[in-house]
Length: 154
Image 1 (cartoon, rainbow, N blue to C red):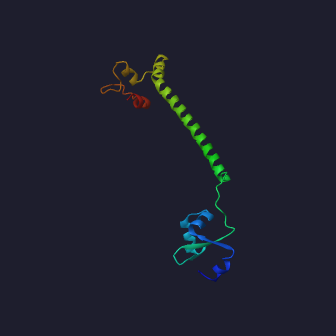
Image 2: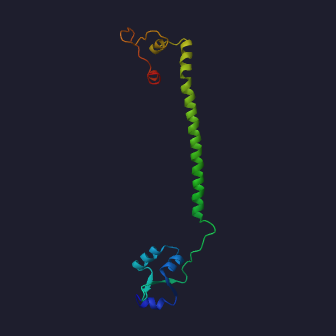
Image 3: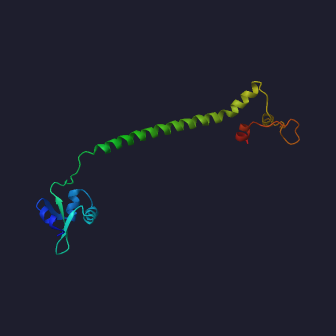
């Protein structure tokens, strides 16, 4: 016995094994042992070394839950919302990639239409048609190609 209080309270508490206490309280056996060591649960050890725990009769019995708690429902709804939002963002990203790919394919078409519209030709335009480029070594003009042509055309 751990003390006089344990003897007096024994009438109101059930004296059960650690495993039964864990089941009744809905916790693990290790948690019951930790509570015993902290002094939050009273216990006794019999002659053969078995530890018995005093558990109040009003202690909650662990029973299977038929419905998930409200917090779980809220988290499941939030999870579903976030999954849907992620799906929409992925679709929007895929659409943006398709648009960019279409625009990149149209760059040569846009360049050729700007040549026929009367806009001034740049050095790279002359080089594209087999004519000497004005920015080549020894060239007198020395015009520079636009940055986007250097990046996309090399």
